[in-house]
Image 1 (cartoon, rainbow, N blue to C red):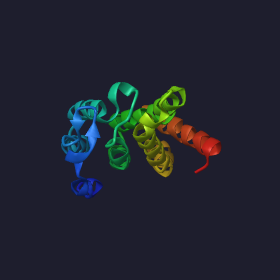
Image 2: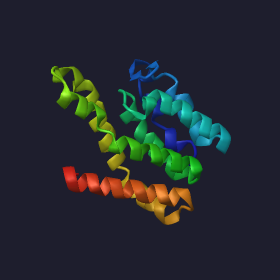
Image 3: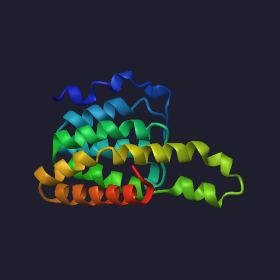
Image 4: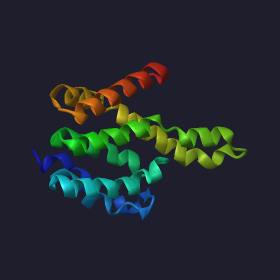
Length: 164
């Protein structure tokens, strides 16, 4: 099981995808550390990954939505405080419509097309993890249960507002 959660990671052209650091070539290594390292190393990897894919907790990049399914798999496999932190990041992302708001407020809305597309793709990939969130809520403990419950509720609200 441990090897299968990142089985498709090598199929992604990470070096050609944008991130807060320029390109996303560091993402696969960070995902590996996150998936298979001890708790302390995994938390450091998550912090580093978050700086790449969700800069300053305000915006997403091209690589963010592609990374989310891998993060859902890691959260489901780990079932620990790292999983809770991943899900907390998802909650922040799902509530963040900064690109869409900037596009609406701009006199040049076409300049935000890529960012809005990336943001919406992230939201869709987070929403697709609803069954994982429900399962983690059922089997988890402590903060993981709270975070899983929170994201499940946010996903349900988003679906009721925007549709599936």
